[in-house]
Length: 104
Figure 1 (spheres, one colour):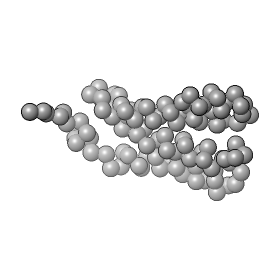
Figure 2: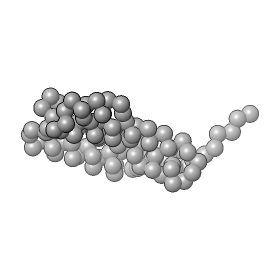
Figure 3: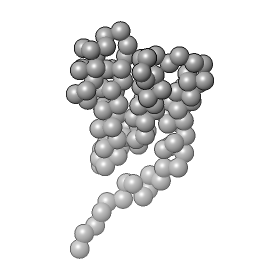
C-alpha cells in the first residue's frame, strides 16, 4: 500500500497509485474471513480474491499507464466480474469456514 502514494507522486496523470492502494487494502480485507463476526466474515468471503482483479489492471496497462486495446479492457472487466461473483462465492462452503477450531 505504501507504493501507491509513491507511484501517485511520480505519475499523477494515471491511476496506478490508487490501484496499488486498493490492491493492498483488498489483500488485507481477505483476512476478515477468519473473523467470528458474521458481517466481517461475509465481507472477507466476498472480497477474498478481488485484489487479483484490481492487480490485473496495472499489469495490463504497463508501461503506458492506460489500457490501450479493446481486448485489454474486456479482459480486465471480465476479471472484475469473475472475481466479484464466480471465483469465491460459487464454491464457498460457509459451514466449513465458520466451524470453530477445537483444541485438545
